[in-house]
Length: 535
Image 1 (spheres, rainbow, N blue to C red):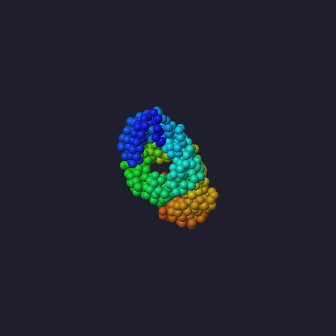
Image 2 (image 1 turned 90 degrees about the horizontal axis):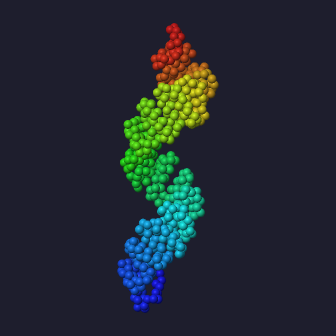
Image 3 (image 1 turned 45 degrees about the vertical axis):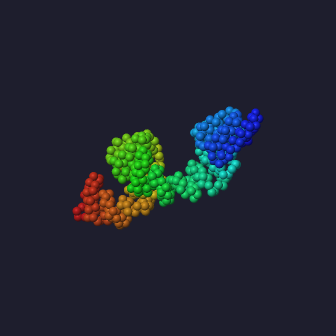
């Protein structure tokens, strides 16, 4: 700042003021701030109206950390002289005193007197930190072509992302080539991530890690993305790198627990979820998955403990309520199970799944009519749901609604041509009817390709051959089925085949064993009586 001559001062006063000012300035340059202030104040004695000296006093006070005193001096200076330097320094004082809004006002006043790229950048940064993103963006755009070291384009990209314009971020950054900057790739990665473009996001996150291999947040995100992509070995690798940096990180342990859960390693899942709960006892998802793991381990009391912890924190957590329903279904308390399923549905759980389980509960309780009603409603909500179709088909079979059961199993095959149960059911039903036997044989063979050692499917194969009149082949398959599972229907089929082959003693033996296994089965007594002792 130019030291102006005050013409009203005497020559001696002017000289002494100038002399002390020069001494103060030299001490300030040498970092001897308190000595500098002493000389500035002496200079002020000889030139009491010089606001320029007050500015230097305020600047030295600021450098010493006496922000309140510096501000007090500046407030007096600004009454006499309003200019860029005075308002900028006042803004700096307000920042140090945490008067952020006043600092912004001071910086804006400074810029009224002179444009300055560094101050504009500082003002934009303050506004960004305050959450005034659109205003910050406007100031950043004023200096986007200034000093490349400021990397203003990255700040603009970051704000565009925070404002919810990820596509604009990508478009904007692609016009720059900051390939050696991790923040450049981080902004791209986050934007791709928000657009659901996981592959592109992953590429950019990995480039961040090439430049900054210990970026914990990026390691954690890459870990989570690989889990979502079911690339579990890669997930494990990046997760372990992150875990070495932060072994007691809540999110990491939660994610590792989930990874182990997906891999079916329940003990490892428990270990990580318990660490997570130790870090934050109220963590919803860790407690929830502890409940799920203990449920799958059939440790129902422990499962209920953790699921109820979830509901104490978040009473509307539908999935936790649903699992309490499953626990009671397993325990045979069907009424309480239904209570939980209805409660889960009211709290956002998938209605079709909820009503499917309500229907299954009725079926397990023996109330097939109510099971049928609820499963029909569930199917109306989700017509192509395989679990609902299969459950309803089985209930229809139990109710002897065979045509409807056939209809549902046929639909299952249309949706999933590898559903072995449906293939066998439709094939066996055709065989029972003596209808479309070649097609029935094809379906049952397809079922056996999927489950080659399923005794019931082998029985179906034998029964198709029986209906085709190929009794020798039927006998071979039925004996194979009997060797896997001893079942009344299989034994009855075996007896029928022996009878066709005129092997009466073996037929009688098969029927007798079938009767012992299922004495209520209609027709078995008559078949036994029909074989005369002499035969």
